[in-house]
Length: 115
Length: 115
Image (cartoon, rainbow over all chains, first blue to last red; front, side, top):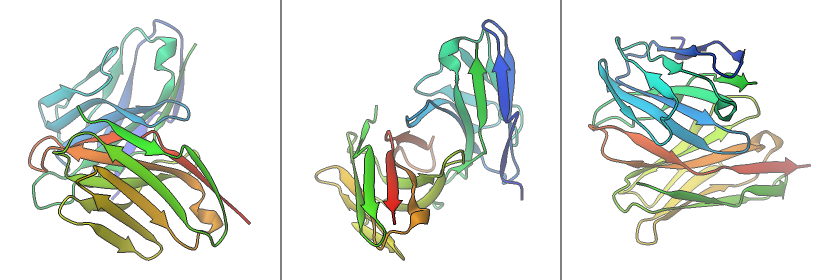
């Protein structure tokens, strides 16, 4: 299993540009998450999904959009990029259900710089 | 929503000494408390976790304790080694595994183990 994969690894955007961060998991997890990690800070939840077709806002959703058309994929869309969106973005997934530990597995991250 | 505070922000110990990192949480309904280790430039990885019905859990040199009454939990690392140097994040989960399993993270502790 590849686990959680993210593309691209690095990206530089100009202010006002748009892009999609890709996230794929091959563990058949229902739950998927997007976090951002600013330098020297913890992880802030942007959006999450409990299954295909279902998404919800996290703590810092402004400026982002997500979709979940399949169990495996959970892309994050940035519209009109701003310098405040410079960060490292992590995608994560976890299994669902009361009987499981719900450990979140993280992807390798995408380092985004907006200039 | 949940609020997780983590202390200290930086911790320097000599090899072989013990390290303790403390977290407090605000939501008495939180029921799962994982600890993640993040090495420089890498993704966060789960090192140990504890559920609200358990007071202490050990795994070799690491242990976690939970005080539900006081709403705090701690990570203990004994016989520290240079490879323990990393940033450690605590987290708290609200909701049960059958519903959206969202984690709120602390701001991290940078642990440096010196020779």
